[in-house]
Image 1 (spheres, rainbow, N blue to C red):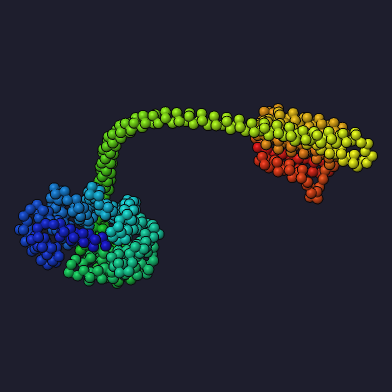
Image 2 (image 1 turned 135 degrees about the vertical axis):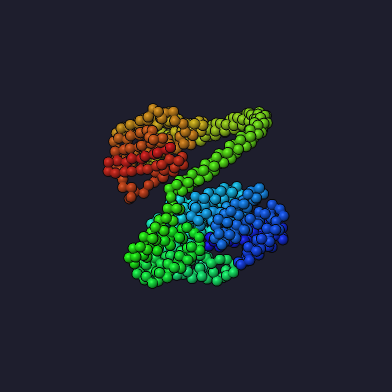
Length: 623
């Protein structure tokens, strides 16, 4: 697939560079003609009239030599083309030229030079901001490191290429498949077959149907991995599919491109190994002949290395000692010429140089960016300071106006509040006077009238006498409650100290009425200054009063305790007696208890009552 993609790019660029039409047509014939290529190139050379024509000529000639695996010539002409295209600053075409040179060196097994060309291409791609070529050269580096048997680097660059491929929009699936293949072959040859098969089979998520004709190498590589797992029959099936795809592509491209020696060399070498391992030596010998022919024709060091390895395994299995030694010597000679420590060291130097140059460039760009940002920041700072000064002056003026308006508003509000409070206080005083003068005097008249009737007439009827006494007592208690109400109305705020006095008075009167009951009233000193509204104060006072009255009337108690304490930001009031108690489930509460509960809930408090044979406990909790 990579070969087809590279050829397409070369062909497209050869005839879309915008050069003179005359040389353009001649080079088109030279590039597509198999037998008359040299003839047309000679004509094209005579048609060169400018630097651009010369650059196009070298470009196409180098590409055509590469297509014929005439690698030295391909490198020679591509380098001559680079010189001219660099002068023209044609970054787009330079990407293709660096790729052509890298591929030619890779075929020759000169992996250090191949990597150097790919790194130069990668730098050019970064300069031209070509996402596709950044991916392509990264993918190239993965494959080259694999061929040199540096599999960890092959996996590293393969995964980088995969990340770049997923960001592409054009030919995205094909490029993802290429990156997956690059990762998988490094996993395969580093002895990690499960990872290799995972990445190989991921390809089929992106390439499906007729498009699988472009990924014959994937079928071969899956077969190669299965081969190493000694799953020979399964491996053979996959590789035969790869052979069929290669042959189908050759037929489809007949007359346009050369025979695909590279893929055929791979396919037949793998089939030869399978036949050797399964003791099918006649088949193995036939496949080895085909593998050798295609490996030599491919002019690819990696393919020749793999062939000699397969030949060595075959001769070893046949116990042909002399040929085994010869094959091994050929394999070692080729391997040592390509895979030596000096070249490995050269790889490290090339990559280190690239990384250093990249870092230096990044640092320079950062410095320029910092300087640019500093300048922008200075201009921005001056602008902001100017705006802040203007804003401060406007704010200061506005603040003075707002302050004046606020003072005027506060003054008006204070005056209005005072006036409202004065009116409310006047109304309270007026209501309290009316209550005292009218209702108070009427209640006093009722008491006086009842007492006069009792003294003026000798009432023999005890029921009537008791009824008159009851009316008189009710009127007296009403006067007391009326005075409490008037007292609350005349105060906007009531403290526990005020309540303490009235509760003490109430308790003293209760003692006079009930000599047999002991009263105990305590309040924490810290609560004396706590303030309530007049409504809250009266509700608390009336509830305590009602609770004590209930104990006196119904409990038959000997002791009544009233305790007021502070507990976790709450005020807890408890009214407790040691009377006979009652069953809460059987007794229906009267208006007194209901009123107490309602009063406490109105001021946001909680009212509970609990009773047993030992007495009754009323608990009031106020925030």
